[in-house]
Image (cartoon, rainbow, N blue to C red; front, side, top):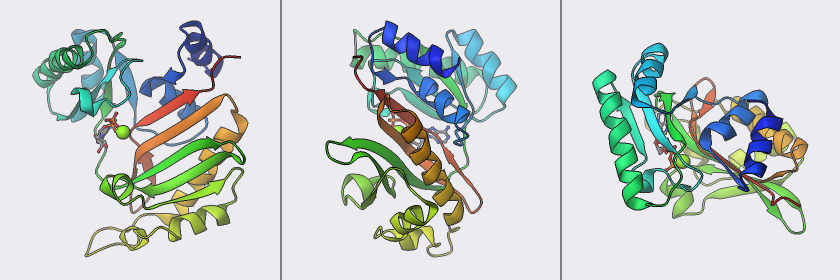
Length: 233
Ligand code: ADP
Ligand code: MG
């Protein structure tokens, strides 16, 4: 679907939360690297997609009513074969229906299982005074508990992005910690600028979350994405 179709559909359905797959389509069109993600609306279709994509795969719930997919049992990682795809499909639907009996279910995504990298988060929120602000931090407990994040106002230069990466306390982790691979910092700088340009060009976006992005020795890849639109005026 094109950007106009995705936004049009959301407006028509009176929702501001784009699904993960819609969010990833918009990001991909803006050349922001996202993991290959396809929508299945039946078990058979999920199995076909997984076979075409190649195992291992990840499967996740697609519902405009489920914001935190893992909390609802809506994410299954490292699925190895067709039998496991079938089981994951049923398990995801059962679990989400238990957590949110009224949730509208669109289907289930089938995604490539990405190789583990250092988990980072790139986000955007709008400040009443400054407008769009980009946030960067390390994923998991470092963001949730320690609030180790940095902020910059949009639009951003590569130099701004470099500063925001080095100023988080967890920066040594990105430099390679105890024999772990370092992250490709120049690539992350470019990625942050791309996200900044993307939100700058799309003022109808109210909030954006790439959580997590896997940062590799070479390159990086967003494995989850969430976009919230401004309310229709
Ligand atoms: P939630 O809606 O709960 O944030 P996510 O899509 O972020 O769900 O998935 C939860 C976790 O599963 C992620 O933080 C990441 O560690 C892992 N994950 C998600 N998608 C993939 C993927 N395609 N490949 C590898 N790991 C993934
Ligand atoms: Mg996530």
